[in-house]
Image (cartoon, rainbow, N blue to C red; front, top):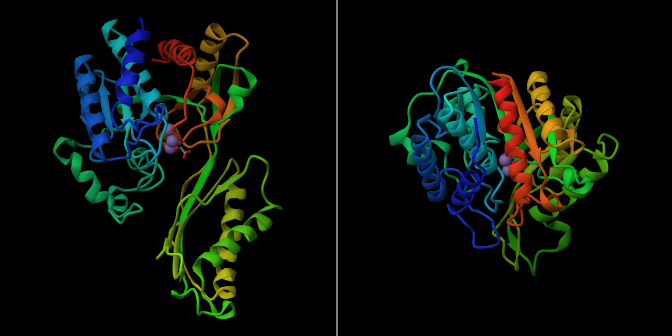
Length: 398
Ligand code: GLV
Ligand code: MN
Ligand code: MN
Ligand code: MN
């Protein structure tokens, strides 16, 4: 089979036009937005044009199916609220190109997928999480986004094209190409990363309710200030984590919603996201204990009521050794001396798929290590090299 690099790049740029932010190459294409639905509709047309069969499942995960049992290649085409043009899109279009080239050559059997809501508008990686069976559709339908919309409401926009969930045994494995989204390859000058494992993630929402009051008349000593409670929580958390974490451990308060968010009002309520990631399951659990204990203490210290949402997450996942080996052989052939094995610090659909089929991942460099930002980019030559390595590995595996 012969992949067409120009066609691959043209499709990648076309996908970027859905939800183009107008700032650099960035995109705004969150799951189930008008831009996401338009992009999926276009992808389904490209899938049909390639002689593959488009299939939307109840969540809007979009497959391009080859006949019979096949190897699945892809990623996700939704984006962060402010996202880069390659996060997810690269793996989907690489999968499309390889499935298309394989179909044109009369084999091997390769299908493509674009998972839905990998970026966690609702859960953590909702589309692959539900398909893998980790979370039921009924549970996922209750998930709410930051604006109070439920998953059940949001996925209605794709209801008229939805068919059943596909059986997992239709696929022999899943391979995902992605940008690294970190600085390792860019700094070392290497071109390809063969992923050995994906770190685990935990994510929860916390609400602190104090007393909204006048910012001029309320003495400092009697305030029940939700923002001050969060500020103390954040400072104290770093101190308590210090004995538990390694340099590879990360944690983030990335979403904060302060109420009513006005200069002359002591804030009565804050709702925020608390996310932490590590490759070690025990460490994730110890961090969770620290968070829960500290939240309770902060509640008492600042006279705020603490409400904890459920802890969502995905455990650390190793990649399949045979797929790793096929990727390593292809990388040795096509990128000799400039590839390495590496851990993924970002989460991917592959982590969910690892529970139901053999999975593997391939990384290409991110310029300056930037991702989940409009500035995200990768040299064209690196995108094309990644496609070649992936195609070579797929041929060996399928
Ligand atoms: C992926 O988008 C992640 O948040 O790791
Ligand atoms: Mn992402
Ligand atoms: Mn991604
Ligand atoms: Mn993601």
